[in-house]
Length: 223
Image (cartoon, rainbow, N blue to C red; front, side, top):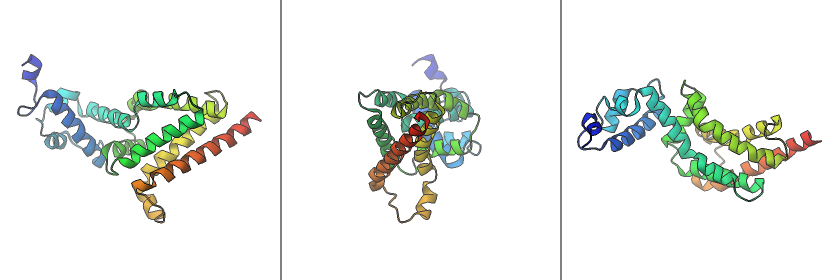
């Protein structure tokens, strides 16, 4: 046993890495349900079966734990390396965008509606905490730069062109809004199928809408 293990506040015979993983999962569920401000370190530790000192030992503070949860959640929805590999495919930009939307929407639909990665990211974006800046810097901005390059290529515009940036926002906003407001949409549009079986029609609609919109906007700016 190392000196680090002897000092660890982990409960029972659990290894420190196991306790850290349990804390992350428990924190993800509780932060998703209650938000950062209402969640307490005590209930997270109790849920994880960990000593009260475990959060400080493994993460430094509740704030740092929350930041770690946000970054992990966003990565689970779409890892940066996965996105980069998708956008590096040797196919036209329309096909790359189709692959991106397929993978993201498939992941969102196949995860449980109560899945904490989805809920914790949606909650944070709706009511940002100071941790949002770190999430933007570490996850959102790098992924945004990858996606916007493909969108700019699709539109045959410079990558920093205002129209390319706004179109990138429009494409991703369709997906975000769908899952951020899914419970409300289910009541407002009960005629639509909101089950996993609807994944492909949703994907196809967002892709068609995005491609047509991108072309219309690009034509206006290339004229």
